[in-house]
Length: 209
Image 1 (tube, rainbow, N blue to C red):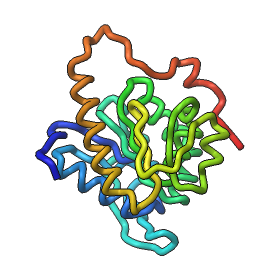
Image 2 (image 1 turned 45 degrees about the vertical axis):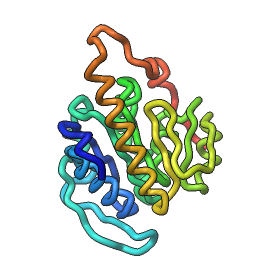
Image 3 (image 1 turned 90 degrees about the vertical axis):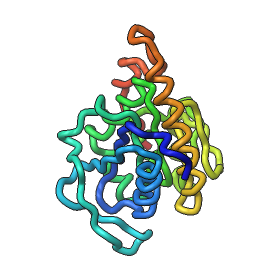
Image 4 (image 1 turned 120 degrees about the vertical axis):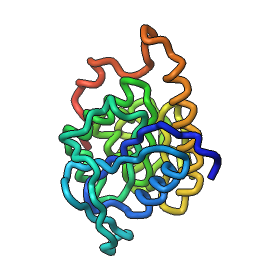
């Protein structure tokens, strides 16, 4: 890992229970090695369950319940995958509002595997270039996104990846994106508007298939 490029950066790792374990633990380790504070946030409190595909794996302690999380405290958000996790999380209105905040403030969002489902249900896929686990490509396209089968795909402040085998490339691109955006945010005048969705666009009806 490169030198600690994310020293002082605070990253939210947002997940429901039954997430794909390696898609949380490996990016979290990469973030921590780069100097970031990586905070595990969930709609659940206590412990949440990791999975190895369809096999039960380890339990992890939630650092901060989503109900107590302030989006403004974080510089970036990372979304682990896993079909069960992502399918639950996309229906949580607090989770939708959480990621919408990051888009409105033009903060970076990194999502892997099934995690872009939350972006779809939050109205954040429209007009964006994304990749994901191949089984949700139709959801992304139907939500107005441009889906491509790529190891990792960056579109401005949004970074997406397909699956566990892509984690090394995902981690490298995530560290690069988070470092660049944090530097840009620190240099932007307070009066300068950020590029993102308007409040009207944010409030539109979420996509449903």
